[in-house]
Amino acid sequence: MPTLSVVTPAYNEARNLPVLYERLQQVLGGLGVDWEWVVVDDHSRDETFAVVAAMARRDPRVRGLRLARNAGSHKAITCGLHHASGDAAVVLAADLQDPPETLPTLLAAWRAGAQVVWAVRVHRAESAGRVGFARLYYFLMRHLVGIKEMPATGADFFLLDRRVVEALRQFRESNVSLMALITWMGFRQTAVPYDKQARLYGQSGWSLGKKLKLVVDSVTSFSYLPIRLMSATGFVVAILGFLYAIVVIVNALAGRPPQGWASLMVAVLVLGGLQMLMMGVLGEYLWRALDEARRRPPYLIEAMTGEEADATRRES
Ligand code: UDP
Ligand code: MG
Image (cartoon, rainbow, N blue to C red; front, side, top):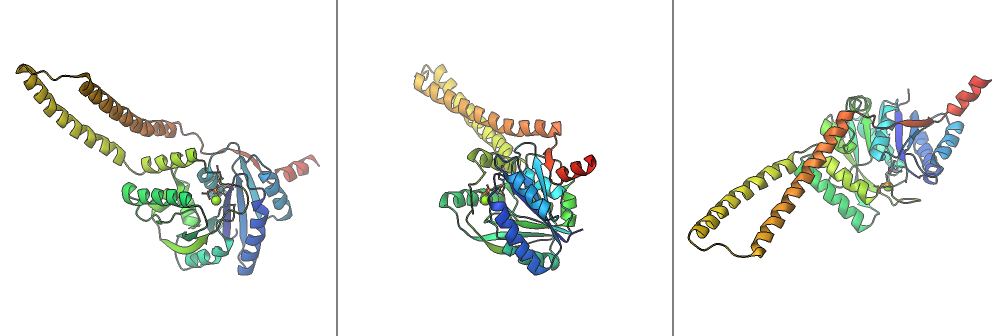
């Protein structure tokens, strides 16, 4: 069993992976640790899997898995962690935004006793819009959702002890932020600083739609705040509505019926909109409950490296 498993989710990263391999080999070779590299191809549309398979033929420490459909990086990471056999696992993006040169610091913190080590971004070589969105997301997670331990500047590069990797196997939920879940799990957690680099080749696989789903997943899986807000808003609106109804009735009985289509429309549209908004919030919780109840597997594996070699051995 290797000491360290490096787990990398990869979506259209054919050009980045060989560069990352060289840098990993340099850094980990220098440290003298025993390592393996588990690359999970999240159903890329480019040559990612062929590139991993070629590296795996040359170096038995490299293993590749290809998912049967694009499941998103959190599920790809989950798959990689399920297949990692090291005493510790590091999750590292394929695009070299998380420099492998930070690995020695992560390992040192683990050896000093931490079970979860977050690499926390000090500087980010990215656009203001992206950094702003990330800041807002982590603010929401810390202050509204209540996962106070989440690093303020973001968490996507981290080390997990074997214990934590095993503990993670017990969670079967699909619509969740893996990083928020790890923070929520507890254990001995610590953080070390690093500078997030710019992407080497290609572009981010996170579309706006995927990001928005992650935001709603992150809120609904750890908080009932939106539902509480609905009850509170409903309560306030109902009280005000009853009070105003009394005014309207009294006026009508006194021979001064309220006039106008405008006031009626305002009430109908505002209340109708509010109700639909609240149904939407309920719907977000409801479909997730149904989705989890189905217990579909979070990912399916289409291929693994080394299978061709096994097939030739069987034939001969
Ligand atoms: N990724 C993935 N599936 C996806 C999108 C991204 O496995 O659907 C991988 C991607 O190849 C990279 C990591 O997840 O290794 C981080 O993604 P990306 O760099 O696209 O996101 P960003 O850095 O913009 O947050
Ligand atoms: Mg990236």
